[in-house]
Image (cartoon, rainbow, N blue to C red; front, top):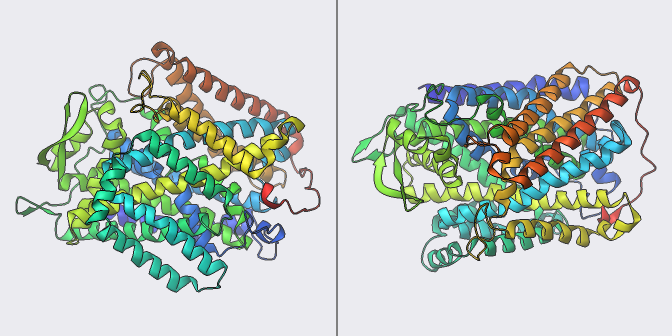
Length: 622
């Protein structure tokens, strides 16, 4: 029953945190006031600034920040033991991640929807703006280059997810038009959309749709990357109410109800048992070690700092500050909605990460296909393993657990076992989990493209020579073209071919974890200065700031010069000079920003930053 107890305890801890710590932050620290004019109303343009109900913005925000992060990170991190993973997710999300997201959202709303990069220039120091924007640009380039590969890989693993995911696009456009243009009611539209999406999971791999899915699953990675980047362009330049908002909203409905099914299945498995294997229902129990003692045999990296870089989304993630200050702040119609969206979404993501951990450490033990290597490829042998054997098969070593297929597969198999415990078919359960993973990744991709457009436009403001990049379409095309170039490269140490193209994001992927967490530290630095200038208490922000600035830098330096993740050799020893150069540039930007912050620290106490000029309608060039 310990598995069920962890789920119940974490749920009530999150509920308690929202109504205590989150409420204290909103009232006493940020002073949320419904009478303050939100940027969505002050600068309403029908494209980026669109006043929207908090439930719809929550759907956009939650699905955008979640992505595959709270699935892949926790699914890998349990290799160090389930106790460290659970503790970091629960306390990290409550005291670090949710404060980071909430603070970034409020600061942006108080500054006409400015992104955290623009805010850095006013709150820290003028030079900090361009330095911060360069860090954002690097992080988002990695996201755009890699997430097409992630989605394509998921589609190849779970073809039954393709048709349901594609259906979400026309369905979202229809919902957006109905609500925004026709004045339709949100509740009946939501129920209809949810029903259609679940029907698509049930019948989305039947008859001609099965052939359709199989055909698209055989597309090359590069083909999928190109298609997804084109989709991202359209999602980025269209008004948010046409595609971005409704797609994220209906996705959130499906994803949250799927999460509810997993939790219900966990209850069923705890009291009745899991799906029958050879006629016998398996008892639910934790099959992973609480703390992994066999560190050297499994070739595990140092748990400190790498656990805190591996689990990003689910505990704290720098990407979230981009969503908070880039899109959500431009859509909330009331400042007091910020706690529900900023703090509440992060706690929901934390709970998702807990369920992912439980699926990997207990759900997997209910039965999973044995994976073996044949000619260098990992395939299912046809044998079904249960208990500790199932866990050890997926987590035999760091490299064995590190592949995308193994990490996603551990969650999909474990959570599908929970769903099957409700009496639902294995085919439906696996298809639903595949849709969940692919949908999360897709919402992150289209949001990241819009965010990169904002960053490119803000960088373009530094010089008249860059004026063309201030245009919405030019900035977006530049963003996806750069991502496409990076993605078109073959994987590291692989010759170029049509089959290998599209995996270039893997070149920069090792930087993502540390860069992402470093970005969280820099966002905290902006929040810290904003509070210091207003003579607000800062200790509860200062501690996470220091923590999130030191750990990612430590992890990056260690990988560059001591040992990379899953390897005894550093990036330098492996000859990955591009990675070393990019990592060194990122660290140099961090150090420079810290020098700027140190220079401004003393005089910032009680001194408000320069006020924004009079509001003007920035139109679609925002």
